[in-house]
Amino acid sequence: MVPPKSQRLLIATLAIAALISAFSGRIDAYLLDVALGAGISIVLASSLNLINGFTGQFSLGHAGFMAVGAYASAMLTTTLAPKLMGQTELLQWVVFPLSLVAGGLLSALVGVAVGAPSLRLKGDYLAIVTLGFGEIIKVILQNLDAVGGARGLTGIHTHTSLFWVFGSAAVTVYVVWSLLNSTFGRGFVAVADDEVAAEAMGLNSTHYKITAFVVGSFFAGVAGGLYAHLKGYLNPSGFSFDKSIEIVVMVILGGMGRHSGVIVAAVLLTALTEVLRSFGNYRMIVYSVLLIILMLTRPQGLFIWPLKKRKST
Image (cartoon, rainbow, N blue to C red; front, side, top):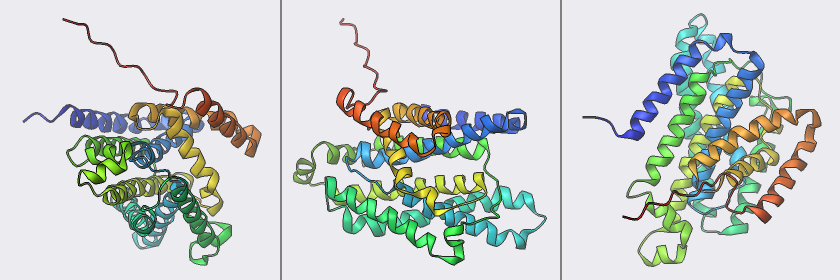
């Protein structure tokens, strides 16, 4: 039996990522770091797109879920590393992916805890709740000595590679795409289009919103684990409100509810961050101005391509 086109594309992407990763030692270290950051951004933006773009919610706490996954994954590998000293292959190919999944699952559980009571809210109210959640996570991490507190968590093994990053990005996009194109997934779009009409048709809108929140949170946690094992150091300040806004900008810039547009925007904004790094925190002004201009001129997003018209027969 021949697998569907989407599955063949996923397998091909994983194979290409593995092939390029095998020769990553020949790539300039700086360019490699930027490429890995872009891949992590794709995971974050695609997972948030399921919540904000396809389900019609507005979450500002994605950095909080990323932080949960990052610290959980890092703590797991750093705890097991001394016990597996000398067994680097086991740590890299078994413990590391398991830590990513564990970080994602913990983020998903937190997503349930946050989403169940708050997703009955709509619009600005939901945004305020998720914003508060993100700040609560940051403050807890800053005051938790077990994870380094405000000084941060050090000694994290750097196992993140092109294969793990772009493999995770491919799986994220595939899962979100497959979910939305399934019979169940049509409910996400229905809730986003008209929640009242969806409820009248018998759909439980809260159930769909929580499901989107949990799936999005899981992949945000995986992205956090990849980030932790890329940088080798974590600090709560790296998961602030600014980080959540950065991810939201990627979704809006790419076109909410557009897979390919969000991917392009994630890569573009990651590269733009490097270009503007010399400006420090002032780069957030650029993001703010970009949002204002975008909402005034292209509210549907920059990367929206018109469908080709079919020739009449």
